[in-house]
Amino acid sequence: MGIKRYIIVTLIYMLAIGLYVYSFNGESFTLELFGLSLTLPVAFWMVVPVLLLAIASIGHLVFYNFKDFLYKRALKKDIEQFQEAAKSRILGEDVTTTYKTDGFKFAGKVLQSMRFDTTLPASFIEEDVANACAVAISVANGNYEDLKKYKLSKTNPLVIQNSINRLKIEPRFALEVLKNCKELNSELCLKAYDALLDFASFNEIKRYDFPQDKRTFRRMMERYLDADDSFDMDIKSIEDMLEQFNADRADYLELAREIKIKLSPDALIALFEKLYNSKGNVAADAYLYVLYDLQMIDKIRELLLNSDPEDFVKFKTIMFLRDHGKSIDIDKFLRL
Image (cartoon, rainbow, N blue to C red; front, side):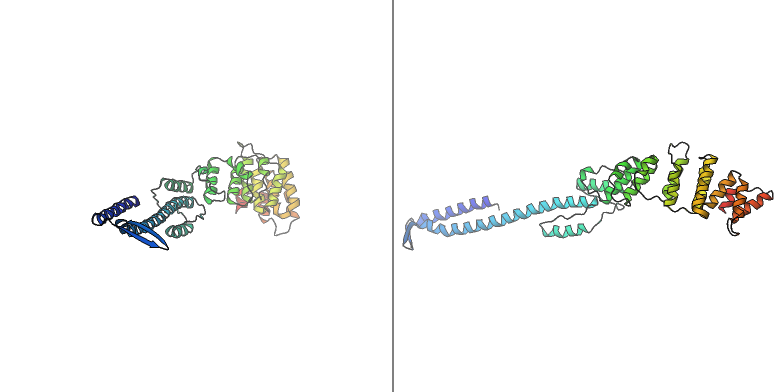
């Protein structure tokens, strides 16, 4: 029963009691208390206890109705906050939402420890949560989504994956990523650098202080050797990169096989003679390969003659076969 209806019924009840008593006793009664006297009809005095009880009961109803109102308001707010927290958790954000009702306090703690699995089927009634779920799944599947409206942190794994997805469809986004890179070894920065290798000039690439490894060197050499690519590197930079990733004999030999189509014979000999003089036996196979490719046989004989018996066995074999009229594919032989 509503408080308003309760008050109306109570007033009618008190009026009925008063009229009933007054109908058979219209006299008055004087109450004396602490030297004061109050004379009122007996009917009124009969209604006074009912009035006091009604006031007390109305106060009780008001108190518990107000308490229930506060609980329902807190519950409504907790429901809204939980939906927002669930949406944030689905999108990979850490949630620290505080709740007022016991049920949601427990649910909130459980939610903090949960992780949304994009590989499992999910269905939500709430549109916002369902949309967040669809976005998370889309990003996990390699698509790029606009996440600005969700106001996610930059360190959020979903944001990082979304940026990586964007690099696949928009390689030049790498310039924006690298501009804000503070940790060069982070996954996003490394992916951005990989994307940069596919379109930027060598001078642009050199602006970023990433460590040069063999994979990076190979990618740049592919572009350098591609006749349809305007990518250009100076010889000194090639030497520096070989030094940075500590190239071995196989790396130098592979470089000799590839770069011979790009450099003139004089430049080719100058490069590998310099490498041989500075690196010794590590670059010796590459130098001998260049000399053989340019048919500088006397120079090869001189180097082999001054070498130890166990050194350059394959090249000594090649020269032996050549001297005995046997043709050999040097590239295939050296790969054995």
